[in-house]
Image (cartoon, rainbow, N blue to C red; front, side, top):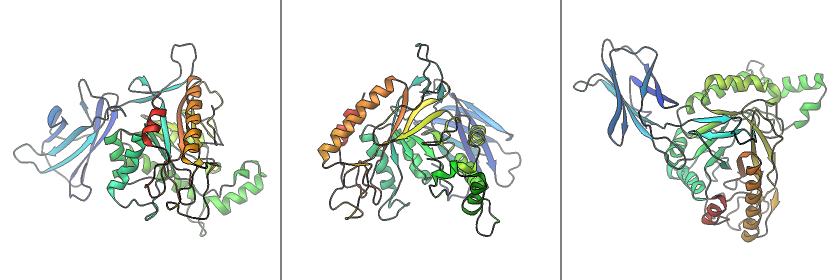
Amino acid sequence: MTDPTAPTEAAGRVRPIGFRNVITILLLGTTGQIAWILEVLDGGHVVSSVAIESVEGELVLPVRQAKRWSPASPFLYDLRVRLGDDKSPVDEVQSYFGMREVELRLGQGDGSGVPRIFLNGEPLFQLGVLDQGYWPDGLYTAPTDDALRFDIEAARSMGFNMVRKHAKVEPDRWYYHCDRLGMLVWQDMPSLLSLKNYAIEILHERVKKEYRIRKELRDPSGSVDYRQVFLDELDAMVGMLGNHPSVVAWVLFNEGWGEECFDVRDVVNRVKRLDPTRLVDGASGFYDKGAGDVRDVHTYPDPSLPEADPARAAVVGEFGGIGLKIPGHAWNKWFGFGWRMARSKEALEARYKGFMEKIEVLKQKGLVASVYTQLTDVETEVNGLLTYDRAVSKIDPHVLARMHRP
């Protein structure tokens, strides 16, 4: 990883496209006629390099017989970008990248015509868990880097190969751990204020207009358009996380929050232009507008299959949410929320086993990804597989991994 505090004049940016690396070098200041050396390394061994006299536009570094990044084999190449020759280097930046390709395929030649998600040319069911990234002592801020890594390692040990990062953008270090450990990420865009007023869809046009002016679109002074802020921050998120191989899908709107202020198809197309290498989930849950690569439903507590769409893959973006309050490890000792409550660990395990049996049936019918709610308890929500303090696993991780293996 590049040290963001180090004073450098060169920065290397890598975006995997198929099996080549497109690199854009950004300069601060002028360098004159000084050579550039770009190198791709595998365990310290240079496997691809190029030396150039000037930088104009994008540079391509091919990698022969590339090792592909996947959850089963999260291989990362090192990258070194040097300004100046070997004898008199002026500056140097080091980074890393993974080579992988994610795509939606609409027909598999098996007569079903079911759209499926492929990773590196192979179908892969993405078994995910919802992760809101809250901490009892820091809310949005993890106490340590080890704590950031712990949640990802816990999900891996349970047999999940995907995390849906819900309504939050983490520090870059979290995505580095996902890259290194081999965890796929569906990344949510944090929502525009919506007050969860789902009735907005059926209100009279005049009322809808007044509601939007008062509650959605501008700050009290009227000078800030929240829609443009949302789009600017969406662009920034895609740009910031665009080099992480672990990130395979962008989730734009969750359960209609702020969705009524946009043409969802326009926003999907905006992200597709910014990043054509990943999947886009236009609307996760409730208010589908027919846009994006997946048809995503939320069904609690049991998972179910979305209505068939020949152009989009079927996903259950949230399900489950079975609560179990663990005495001594609850944020609120008086209250705890779950979509359904279990009386014991044994009851929770039995209910979860039933969910996985249903997921297997839905998979055979065309489901390509599922997201269980959720990885950890969050304040009064006690529907996590781990307690809020991460001290107790409500179902043994080895048991979960066995359930998930099929």
